[in-house]
Length: 93
Length: 203
Image (cartoon, rainbow over all chains, first blue to last red; front, top):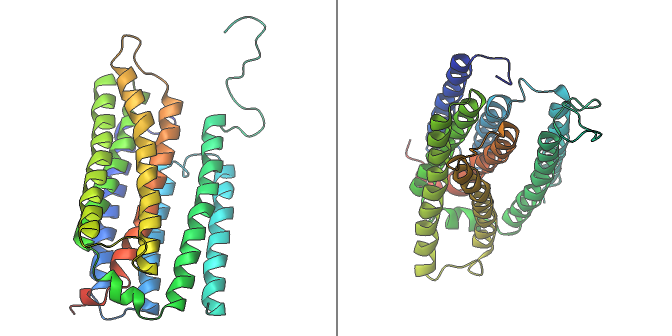
């Protein structure tokens, strides 16, 4: 295997991520049913989405096993995006 | 390879196959592409107080939840198809790539049902700025799904020919793209269907 894992191990890891993604999907719907919309709701919703993103990128997209250069590559635009969103919130646009 | 041709099994500088590196650079630009849309959404929400809350409740979060489950499942089957091509299990590769393709089509069918429901009510991108953002972002995401279907059909079709399909590297690169399409939806789902919808609050 390209990731240096056996087939069985890689499959087990993918399934674990799949179940976690499903659980987080249920969690994000459940969180939207709680009475904190606005600021808190958005932060909670985006945090759950960020955790799901990390799971997909690390395991499904092999960042966990691949060259660290790729992690830097993708960290730059993600960082810029967070700066932009944060700046917009702080400026109150 | 012909003699004299310059061939390298590995890339001496980066150590990353060119296809993979190219796809990650493309995905980096894709993040910036969608960032522009998210920026638009934030600015438009501030410029139109109350509009997003009022309009978001008219979207069907149930259909969007179904599509979330479909896309996450298709991400899993895509990862499994690469794993099976690596160990040269053609039958399972075809099965899982076929399931991924099926997921992509189910997603588009659900999207079609959702869109046609809106058009039946005379709701278009011109209705208001929330719908403009909604159609823009989910529309571009839908186009990305179509863009993933094309190489999937090609690879699956080729795997049934005599020569078969053995290029693991290419399927892996397609996999990266497909997981990214899934990621964009992971953000679009809460942002459009959940976070601004006050009628969801039941506790």
